[in-house]
Image 1: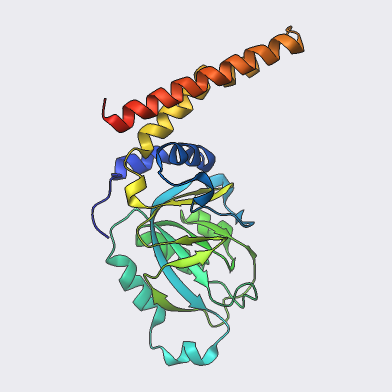
Image 2: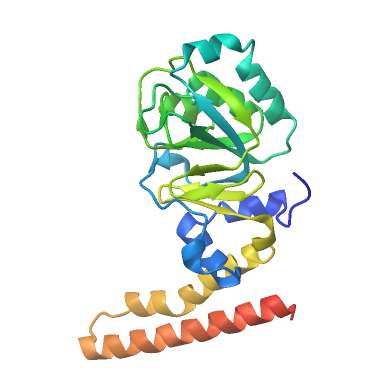
Length: 252
């Protein structure tokens, strides 16, 4: 992975917002249609919601757990994965594709591996398989999003690293910026992150100055008055947001 528009400091600040807010910022500055977003379209569960959002650049692995012969044919598959992760600067999120999903046979995330991944700069992991030891992983600072919980690791075996992987209805490429929390995840190509932090700040601020306070200050007003004020606030929010994004992209 080469240089990124987002610095480590930017990524830490983006962690202060939830994933839907990141999506709002992305759709304002991306050239693609919002329906083309690389985000989780399928059902996914954050099993460590108490940790809040996680942010980082995607590192990918494909794995199997139900193939004993594959596992025994490899001398040190997890050592190879750890070496691969060690060679990529963080912050990182491990995107793990279970090649046996939805008939998952084991977990690649657990207490031992979670602590190892964390030590190698991964703030957490996302898989379309299942996970275990989620509490213990959280104690070590490793967040987990997955399809479900499970018991064993079986013959857990990483087989490929650094490939584009498809899960939850989208494709994630190595090096994409990933933001994930209890709502799911969004993966953003580097070229679409140039104005992301500023857009997230600006659009969130526009909501706080218009539609949100209007909705919260409705006490004692008639429904007709509230509806009128909400419509006016929505129009003002749109105006502020559009003007902000226009100036942002023009460098003014």
